[in-house]
Image (cartoon, rainbow, N blue to C red; front, side, top):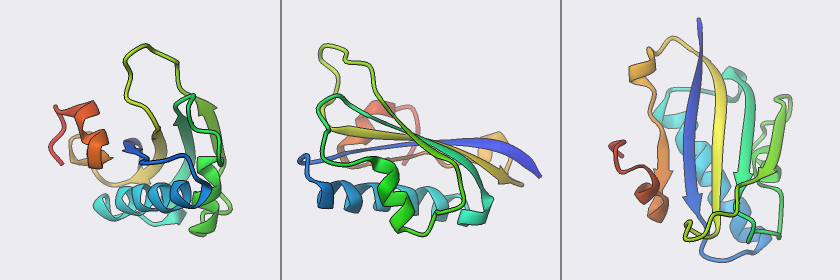
Length: 120
């Protein structure tokens, strides 16, 4: 079993806790499903949020999904002029039999523009 890293992002329409939970839940669910993973395969998860998001910790949505015995951390993304607003990013470290080339990184909605080089 190898350790792999899975990336992803989603852009929120608004800074509201309920919307944050909905969108981050969708992101994490897609990350797991597209890579054939379960919560037991997660080693740790890093979330970042752009400086304009204040309503909730992205990790709270993961906890509501049942990801309760995995180390989670949240950090603020760099405040770069012209960067896409209201974005939550994820970097999940997982145990997987997939080769690096088989990992499916997940960029939902408008966040797909952040990584046009990765087929969605």
